[in-house]
Length: 129
Length: 417
Image (cartoon, rainbow over all chains, first blue to last red; front, side, top):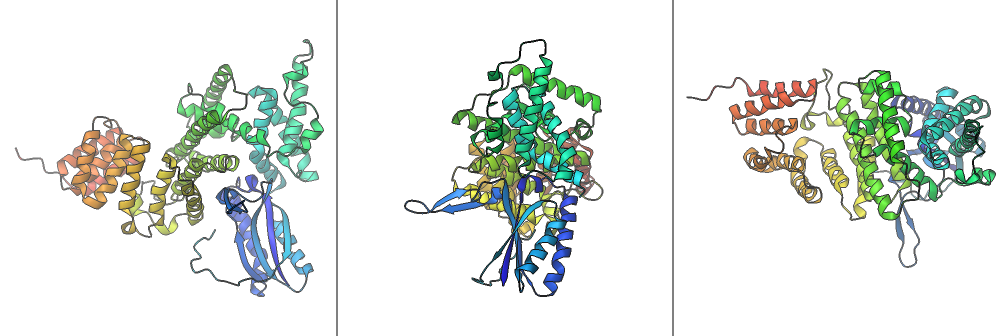
C-alpha cells in the first residue's frame, strides 16, 4: 500500500525557530527517514513553503476563482508530506510516530493511502529546502 | 529542543495575536503586557506537564484576560468596581474561549499592536525598539545590545516611547477600509525599518543581524492576516531576497562584498524560492507598488546565475517604473548604475550630475560616482568622490570598502599645471 503522510503544525511556531533549531530538527528527521529510503520504501518527501506563498483555485460561478492564501485558514496548517510504500498501516504509523518524536514543531501526522497518478520526476528540481 | 525551549517558542509565536487581543480588552498597554506576562508564566508552569493546548493563543488570551481583570479590580479596590462595559467583550468568557480566533477581530488586533509602535512623533530608532519590545517580545537587554547602548538607557528609551504612545491614545475603533490601508502602509514601512536596521548594523553586530529574521517573521505575519495585499507580498519578497545574500555580502574579514563579486552558489535558495513565489502572486494583482518593484529588481539579480547574465535592461525599466511611483534621487541613482551596465559610465554620470546637490551628504552617491569615474578613466575625479564617500561613511566596513576602491585606482597623478 502507498501512504501519504501529511505533517500538520502551527506555522507561527515553526517559523519562529532559529536556524540552529531548524537544522537540528531537520537532521533528526533525516535520520528517521534514512533507513526507509535505503529499504526503497520512501517516495518523494516535500516541505511546503509558508501558507503566505499559497494560492487557492476555487470553483466559481462562471470560471474558477484564484484566491491568495491556503485552502483552509486554520491554526494548524499542512507543512509537508512524505510518501511511503509499506505492507501495512502499522509500519506507516510507526514511521509517523518516529517523525513525531523528533519534531517538536509538528502536532499531527495524517496518514492517507493514495494511488499513483503519475510517478513523475521533476526536470528542474531547484526548489530544495 | 527541551520542553521549556519549545514552550518559549510557542509563546513568542502567539505573542502578537494574544497581546493584541488583550490590548483590545483592557485598552491599556501596560495592563495588557502584564496580563500576557502572567499568562506566559502559567504556561511555562503547566504546559510542559500537560502538553501544549490545542490552540495556545486562545489559551493565553483566556488566561491573560482573567488575570488582567483581577489586577484591574485589585488596583481599584478602594474605587467602586469598574462597570462591565469598561472591558469590552467580557460576557460569556467560555464562549470566547471556543471562539475561533481567525475572526474579524484578530487581524485588526495585530495591526493595531504594530501600528501603535509607528507613532509619527517617534524617531525611526524608537519605532524599531518599541516594535521589537512590544510586538516581537525581545528583551530590553537584547535590544540594547543590538543598538550598542546599556540596558538602563534602552529601558528608559522604551519607557519614554511607550509614554508617548499612551499619551497619543490608542485607536480602538475598528478601522475603515481607507484607514486600514493607511495603517498597513505605515506598518509595512516600520517592518522594513526593522529589517534595514538589521541589514546595515548587522555587518558589525550579530545582535542586530537577528532583526532581519524578526522583520521577516513580522512580514509573514502581516501577510498571513492580509493575504491578498500585493505590496505586503512585495515587502516580504524583498526582505527574503536581500536576506538570501546575508552569508555572502560580508567576507570573513568583515569587508563588504559587492553583489557582482558574491558567491552566488551560497545564496539561500530556500529564501529566494519563497520570494519568487510571492512575487508571482503579487504580479497577478496588477497593482505595482514600491516594494513589489524593488523585489522584482532584486529577483532579477537572484535569477542571474552569474553577474553577466543580469538582465540590466529589465532592471533599468523597473527603476524607471519605481521613479514614477515613488520619485526620489536615490532611485535615479540606482537607475544610473543599471544604465552604466548597458551604456557605459559616461551615460550614467550624465544622469547623476543633476542629483549632486540633493545627495551631497549621501555616502552611496559619492561611492557610486567614484566607481563610475574610475570606469570612465577619470581618476582624479574618482579619487575626489571616494574621499568624500569616506568622510560620509556610516561604518568601518563602508570605509574599508571605499579604501579598496582607492587602492584599485592606484596612485593618482596630480593634474598638470
